[in-house]
Image (cartoon, rainbow, N blue to C red; front, top):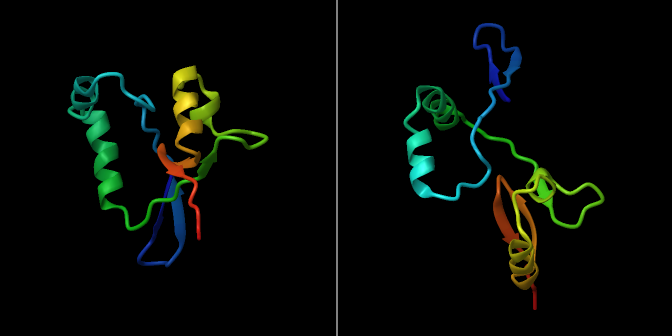
Length: 102
């Protein structure tokens, strides 16, 4: 979903556009092939022209974990690595490590 402002009226409106690609790719070539598709290029163009993008923050251990963790994308070895690296969440599938302040 993206929001835009009507420059004549000042009204803010929104439009939702799905990004129909996998959360994770097993092979880089698959991603590069998809990025050549006209329907994907249209969404990427919208993303690139946006003034601001809003994402939710996902968490590993929440009462309702984000889709990245509950959607079957990760295997046990991935969860072991998440624990080892002290990953506490993600924003747009960019994983965030716990920060220790001394």
